[in-house]
Length: 283
View 1 (cartoon, rainbow, N blue to C red):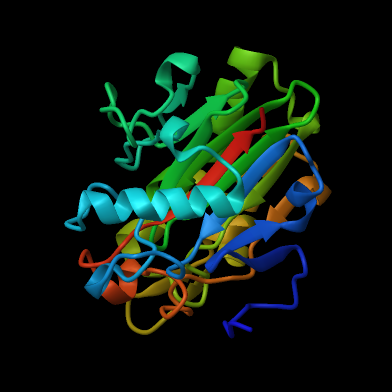
View 2: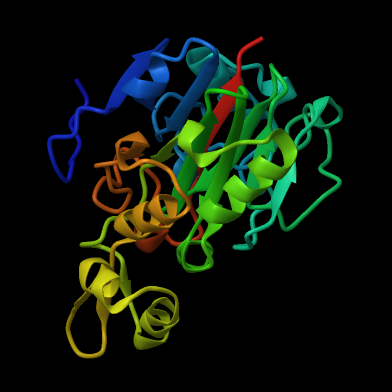
């Protein structure tokens, strides 16, 4: 049994192990037999050194052979074809790309012909959407009526600019998605007790969120420092976008609190591997 720290006794997020690969899944999503999903950990891959072991970032200084083997193992454990996965190109935007069959394998076995994409959506079975993390917030979207999915990267810039709303709008335009038909999840990421920021970041949030909301998502630290709760902030964004509170699944696992299990930029800097969120419609 792998030991790790949690923020509360949430039973929704479960750490699983298959064929030596450890990954997180949401119980609610696991009951939906038409999707495959997961959030990787550091465990179960072949990378070494600062990338040990399940590095899923091709853009790191890890060997390509190692990363490909990590994808093969992760895909086999979660249940997706890594050679048909479609990878984001994250630059902290709110740009969302509609993924079609023509995009299969872009980022894994084919070059990406796009950039500045922090969100991916699709309704095509067999295409795994993949986004990357080492403290930022993964956002999962499952439209049970139209059988469409979305997966987005939301750091503090994405959060303050409402990446969750941008993803839902893109799904509505592409597939007719309505928020009442969506079950969303906020994935493992840095918690409100660890995400320390300066006054310039707090000021950006204060422009976008009400005073009552700020009292719930921001608390004072030492000097001019503050702590921001991106989990709760993204909950506010998703609720304001129309998703029912009982259809928003929130993590209780912090990346910074668990450096043995998860990569954390706040602890490790740039010399580290990358975690990945994945979401796919099964064929």
